[in-house]
Image (cartoon, rainbow, N blue to C red; front, side, top):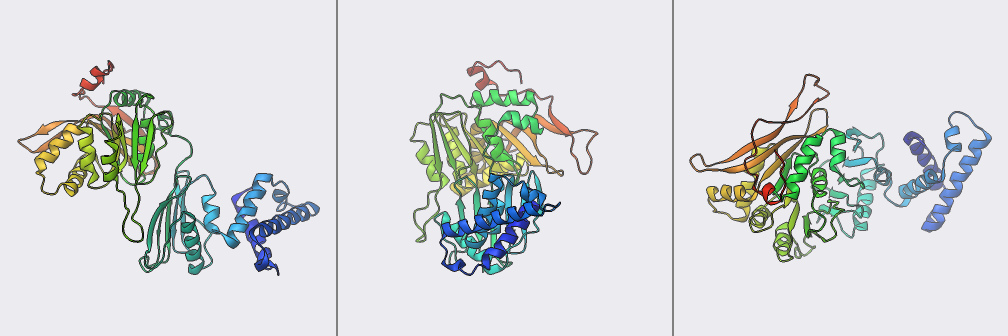
Length: 426
């Protein structure tokens, strides 16, 4: 059944059910039964008068029937249009900017839906229901809420008076399929040669930070890298919202932050979790994303026997990632000399992998850089680019063609490869 046919059928059934005289007296099970019977009547009616429009309805299967019934039920007593959107497994991002403007990302393309909510009030009621299902509350006194759904989706809701153009909901969804390096190669983000290099670096316990802008695929890439971690190691993951899908590790501990309660107490930060993780005898620590003062604790962990740790950071370039690390460390240790911070970064971070979302919306690995040292005279961190993305003649304004290419720079720090017994020539 096409999306257009489903939306049409849901709308028609909803109108008929809402006109039912006993609607307010029906419990949820009775309402679902009524919707089911009305749908079956529609199908039987279509069979008696077959035409081009009704032929699709005649061939509806059981799974499609359940989807239509649930959509109608949700539109009357549940999440309405929002449920229809989040029930589509191909939707990776949902942006609701008030009741009339709904945008979704599907298969890498962002577009506006024709659907909309009936009114601002309906959207407010639906958001309240949606948030309450996660055990949270949103109202005028607490107009901003962040939470995670059971499937791992990350939700942010902002209500008036903070949101000027009506209630705002942003949902970031994640694939149920575990991301692998093979898939990144298939998507053109990596080459097989680079994948082998990254495998060796992870196995040899190089500390790696994946940087990139919003939507560049940092978490996805980190998921793929994590699959290279040897299965017999003890790993602790630390995240704001649990998104990582590490499948091959048996000795795995997953930690997630907690927001403060309505009384302002009980918050557990990434910094708290890193400190706690260090007492759990981890061999590696994987931090979903560093955003603030926890950067100092992460660097110290990398410097104190937890080699092979992985993390991501929001940045527009490799150099920008270093600058942001410096700023974040200062949030955790105000007054620490910049030279000491940079030396700490150099001692802790071995490799930075920078990702970007390009003009054709494709996600590419732009650079793999080695952090090699600190130059006192210039007070700068020395970087050694190993791979760089280079566009080829086939690129146009709408399509990017190119690949990650090895630079002429030899790798400087091979000691971890040597210790691991990996004789890879990078």
